[in-house]
Amino acid sequence: MTSPAPVRLAWLDALRGYAALVVVLFHLSPKVIGTGAHLAIYRHFDAGKYGVLLFFLVSGYVIPMSLERHGSLRRFWIGRLCRIYPAYLAAIALVAILAAAGWLAWPASLRQETWASALAHATMMNDLVGLRGSVRVFWTLSYEMVFYLIVSGLFVLRLHRRSAWWAAGLALVALGGGAALPDDLLGATFADRRATAAILLVITGLSVLAYLKDRLVPAAGAAGITLVLLPAVNGHATKESTVIASWQGVLLLAVMFAGTVVYRWQHAQIGGREAAFSLTVVALGVIGAHWTHLGTGAALRLWLATVGAVTVTFLFAYAMRNRTLPVVFTWLGRVSYSLYLLHVIVLMLMPRVVPDLGTHGWEFRVTAGLAYLAASLGTAWLAYRMVEMPGQRLGRKIAAKLEPRPAPASLLATQRAAPGTGRGENERQSV
Image 1: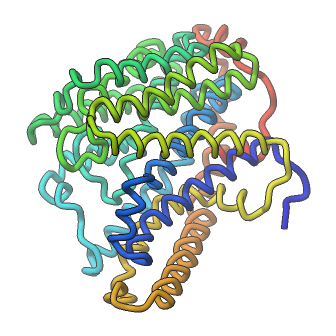
Image 2: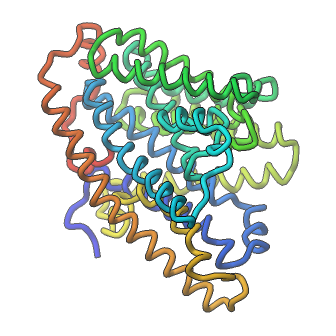
């Protein structure tokens, strides 16, 4: 079954939904095919990072587009906060309920460093502080939030069209200087982590408040840009950090800016040669940095396969951008955020429903896996309908109420320079 007509951004929804499904299957696979088989595949292809990199490319494309087409930092941040925080807080609340019932346990770092973890959860920057999120997959949100703040800063200071240089530059820093980057400059000790989490909350809170109030916007923009240093000096503060080193955290930002490069090239804001050069540097930088810093042929082969698959998948999705897509893919895109946040919680409950799954035959394991997928998708759909959609409607109401105020003079030139095309329903959902 297909949708009645092509939607301008349906390919991004489809790609995001596909990436979420890949991550879900990656986390499910040890239960179904066994840990040994899962690790055998992982040694040749990292499906988890493949899905995450696709997510980051989509974010890199969508976020600057959303900001510049709104032409308003206030509208952008209202939309972002009402888009991502309701489902995020709902996931935390669900973990709290299940923990209180004795069905799940809070992460050790949250129990041992409660105040630092609470502060880090407030900004979504747990991984960059060196603390585990209440849900394991929260780690990617750290990089999403940093990217939002950097892009807002570039927009304020009229540097937003230089995405190709940011993408290539960050990749080259990770490749050439990655070994010299500190991993835990701001989070080596308990006191450091608590202070870093508190400072990040102040910076983020004041920056967002400045954008919403149109006050001290240039200062907020400068503060946002400086956050590019955070993954460069504190990317792996503790063993709780998912990113293996600061250079890998820098690479993740480079990948997000690579998505922006695609957007700018598509809309003729940069030339094809500049875009091709930047994207090539990022791809080779991701492969080369892992090969150089990990120093093994296995790392080279793994990341060649992973980056190659990401490139082919993104190019295929881009080639399909003007075609009518099956409804199932765009539906997956709509529920992808809730699916990403909640599937791990459902997976952690699986042993209570099906104890000792690995001792059963493959037919039983496959059936249990399909049941898990159905439960995860159903939970995501409910969260989308009951949490995400009301949050998005609230964001549009707040923005409509506040937006009539004139934009500050410091942003007028930037707003005029931003693309002026209208927004469709799909685009509003992406925002």
